[in-house]
Amino acid sequence: MSVQWMNDADAALAAAKASKKAVLLDFTAAPT
Amino acid sequence: MVSAFIHEHFVPFQANVNDPAQRTAFRRFGALWTPSVVILNSDGEERFRIEGFLPTREFHAQLHLALARIVAARKRWADAEPLYARIADEFSDTFAAPQALYWRGVAGYQGRRDKTALKAMAVEMKQRYPNDEWAIRAAVWLPE
Image 1 (cartoon, rainbow over the protein chains, first blue to last red):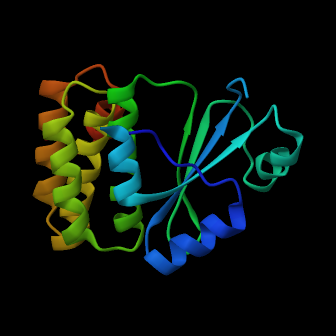
Image 2 (tube, helix red, strand yellow):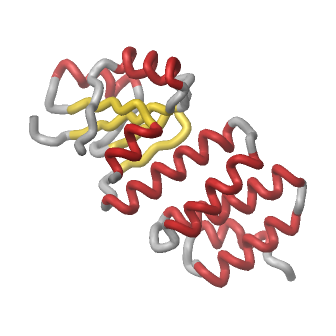
C-alpha cells in the first residue's frame, strides 16, 4: 500500500478539520 | 505498514521541490530542507517537525511521538501518558524511546501533580539510556 498524497494544502487542511485527523506534510525532493 | 498507519491517523500532503507549482508550500510551512515532515493538528497548528531522512522504523516511531504531542499539547495528560508509554515499550530500540520516556514522566507529573513520576523517569532513563540527551535533560530530577 502506497500513501495517497494530496497536493492541495488547503484541501488537506480542510479534510483534516472535517475528519479531526492530524495533517502530515511531506516535503520531498524525490525525482518526479 | 507505515503507509497504513499514515492513512489511519493523518491526512497526507506532499510537496516536491522539483515541481515549481508546489514550492509555495515550502515557504508557507517553513520547510528549509528535504526531506522534512511537518505535523499539524486538525486545526492546522504545527505540533511536530522531522528534518532529515530516517529509516522506516525510526520514522514510524517519530509519527507516534507526533500524535502523542498533539494530545499533550491539548493538556490531555491522562491520555498522553499511555501513548508515550507505548512508544517507549514498542519502539524501545529507536531514538524516539528516550524522548517518549521523558514525556511519559512529564505527563504523569502534569496529570497527577506527582513529583515521583519525574524522579522515577530520571532514574529509568539513567539506567536505560545513560548517554541520551533526554537522560541529560532528566538528570535534574535524579535523587541526590
